[in-house]
Length: 78
Ligand SMILES: [Zn+2]
Image (cartoon, rainbow, N blue to C red):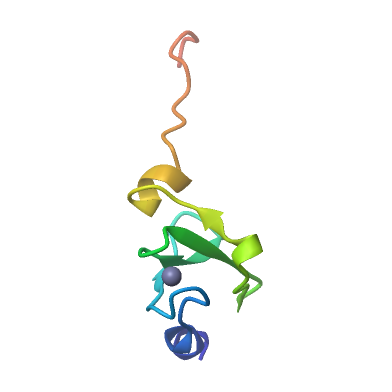
């Protein structure tokens, strides 16, 4: 099981637990180390546990990873 595999993973930097983060609306998955504020990508179900591949996050991952990109309201929605 992929979930079981992910549960065994720890942060390669601090060896701390990783938060398996999978936004429901996104294909992309990430493994987040809150201590280091890094998000490691999961590509095709395979975690990429490389610091060079990790994405720096700030604060809550949901807030920084998917900023609200609402459209301008200039156009008439109808
Ligand atoms: Zn860490």
